Image 1 (cartoon, rainbow, N blue to C red):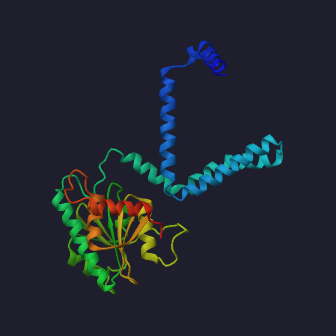
Image 2 (cartoon, rainbow, N blue to C red; image 1 turned 45 degrees about the vertical axis):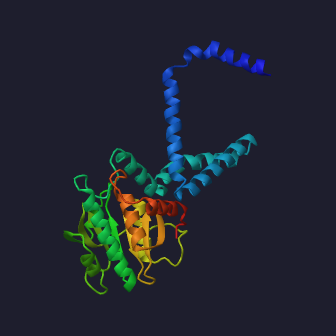
Image 3 (tube, rainbow, N blue to C red; image 1 turned 135 degrees about the horizontal axis):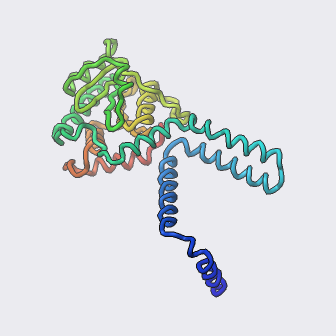
Length: 291
């Protein structure tokens, strides 16, 4: 058997080897890498369920062609051809995130501009953590959005511009119930409170826990449509949550939130704080259910 296999390989090399170029090897490797990255991306999104459904329809189409079920094959083939346009609409949030990642692939994923010192970045994370802990103890609901590489111009334009230094007192004051700016989100850009009372897009994920209200759904929706990091304090329970790339991590303490923010927003080589808490957060984020 091995001898026959070797003869077959030798036959193909002798007859078709002259048509096989080095460029073909790179071409195949590049396509394989693209497929690998695409599959890795959609595995962690709700798009995976749609991909499975499409794959099932393709299998049915091939089986119907083999069994000569011409009517079923005709319907499925034409449906899948027209369905390409529908997929662009259905996968709009996921496609947007892919294009944003491609566009920012060479940009370091920092919270603030590169001109800011690590101590300034840490200070922002500390002030937000203390403010959220304060509001958690009083069950004051809040939404704080950290802008990263994805610019949130449409979001900040929906709110009221503040342009102030980030401080615990300011954030607590903004979210005091029945005040003009409490109903909405605060957006932090370049280390400053840029705007308040901003309107965020709600998530369309149907698998979320029914106990999650509008504030959590807005935070998750914001993290699905951009690379922003969103901190949420529940008005009902006082629990602190963190939304990143559509995933929600709940029941954070002031210390775990501070370490998580530093881990997410700072270059790893500049963050000299102990990594234990941050690593635990990232592990919890990966294992957490979207709820």
